[in-house]
Structure formats: C-alpha cells, structure tokens
Length: 85
Image (cartoon, rainbow, N blue to C red):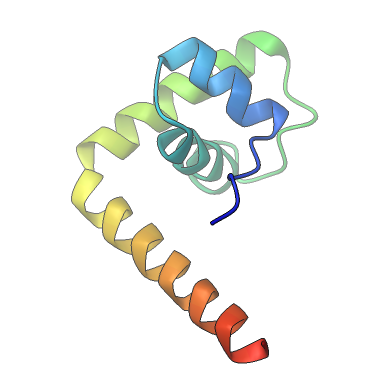
C-alpha cells in the first residue's frame, strides 16, 4: 500500500498538535467543513492555529463518529479503486 500523501496543512497540524497523519487529515477536513466553512488558504497563520485547536476539540468530542465516517469513506474509496482495475 502506498504511503499517504501529507500536504502542507496536514504537516503543520501534525507539528502543532503532535498527532498522527490520519488525525491531521481529519482535523484539516473539520477545519474546512466545520470551523471555517471554506478553503484554508485565506486564513492567517494565527487563524489556522486557532482553527486547528478548535477542530481538534471537535474531533476529540466526537471521536467515534469521525473515526467511523472516515473508515467508511476510505473503504468506499478503496472499493471503487479495486472495481476500476
């Protein structure tokens, strides 16, 4: 299985929070969809740091739900890739 791509936002989140790459991906998604309701490129560094903390709190408060959601999304994606082969 190939190594997951870790983008610049995920790298910054991992550095800031000391979390795994999987958690950083969830935090980035939560920042986009729950915290800022937008892309992240227009946020200042300070806003991104606060947003990451807020997203981490949301993730931790709803860990079971987010883990299940992303596990199911990954499984669906892998199934689609397998069907394309």
